[in-house]
Length: 210
Image 1 (cartoon, helix red, strand yellow):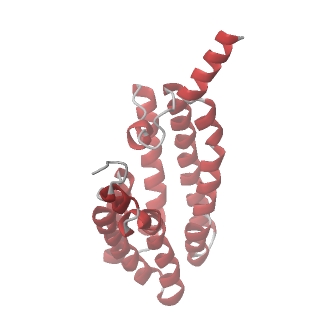
Image 2 (tube, rainbow, N blue to C red):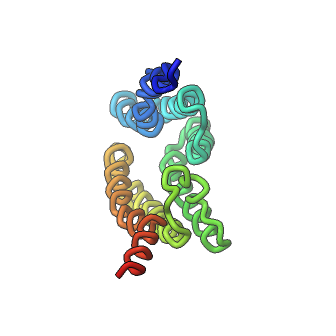
């Protein structure tokens, strides 16, 4: 039988699980936040915190089942949500869930800057499979930029929860953080294109033939 048509490859490429992966990733990242916003408006911050904690556990389980892996950032985020959410419910004090993003963003920034200082950019170990052509200099730039982004977001979270109502803070967390993060990620695209090994190779080839 000819090997030009392999039904196994065809089935794998169009399998429902493979086709659903982008939606699973979206759900893992954003459904807990959306539920947090909805339940807060309906039943208040403490019910919302409980649902948020349960949703994070569900997101971790979904990642394990559907993605076959649990991203490191999801582990860290889930652990912090459970700790600070648990303190919120136990002590009946919403301060803990409000400072959770500050702690999370600061932890990410410290990890990134430590990796940069030690010469082992953490982002490279996490995202290298997605951007295999990015040079070491590109990884350093990306790590530095995201480190500063997380520090700024930690400061912004402090300003918002201290200056505005709980409902406003929840709305900002659900509908402000996502577009800000997306816009910042898009702003990093020039680094991905300008500092790729393919670009460097093309520049070298162009210089050699000129």
